[in-house]
Length: 399
Image (tube, rainbow, N blue to C red; front, side, top):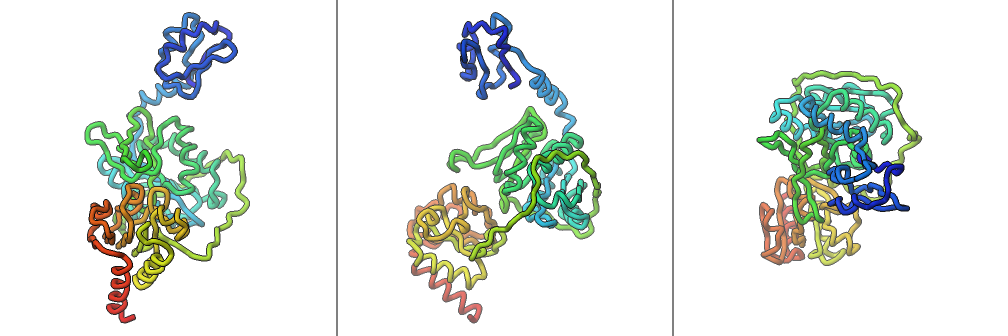
């Protein structure tokens, strides 16, 4: 802890206990101890009659970071790769990263591990000004320790003001480690990112309190400002075949890794559900009333060439597997057309699909919240409307 109690000087007078507004001081065996609730207000330091509570060098280092905050600039995107190919979420991050960098008058940097130069070139065509590439074959397989160590070093050297990564299993696994090592803040699962016009701080928006509110979070005193972004929330930027930029090959020696990835095994499922890449999604909620209703939705999805999605309510009822779930606790999607059948429109579900190009809502309740975000709304029974839609689309396609 940056603030500690020297037990050799503490007399157990308990003066500090009443001074702490955060209940961060406890007594153990007649001595005061600082716990994790400490907010570094330093009130206890001034009231301790024995001078037993002191500020450590760690907090001094944090103060030094605040004083050098102007040294940080540019926007850095961690470009995730899988089996040597850049993941789609990386291109989405470049889209929002380009927008943020332009507003700040800064450069957009990308950091790529375990891929070749052709993949780095693609990042430039999607908007990056400079790509830091470390193509060591050992980095193709994800490892928390080595990835966190390398990215931390690059950030310390390049000093970007903003660092973005995907809220994927990989991003969620190691980006918090990087933030902890840098002693800075991290906002997870962001759905929107903007630059404050006055302070130029990053406004990081994410669902909070079970999705009931949208919280805007700032990190004004520390750098870099770090955020992970849910896949399919942000739009890809513009692709320019003729765009040029720098590719800097970097070598990292003495990488710290306490573990070694021996083998990666893909989960094999009898049904392949790729909601992230689907252009047409037909989703069902509690109004689908069971497997019979989802059978109708599956038929409509098949004629559209799409896939079936579901709300958490339908998954909890056991009508369809979790791999189909859309929403805050499921997948975030961005199809061309999203057809919501029997879904009321809870905030937790809207977070996962409201960025769809076109939303068509089918619900018997005209007051259902889903109609507030729908492009087109149909008030009626899905058991009547869905078969009619399926039949009409088959006629148009000559099926």
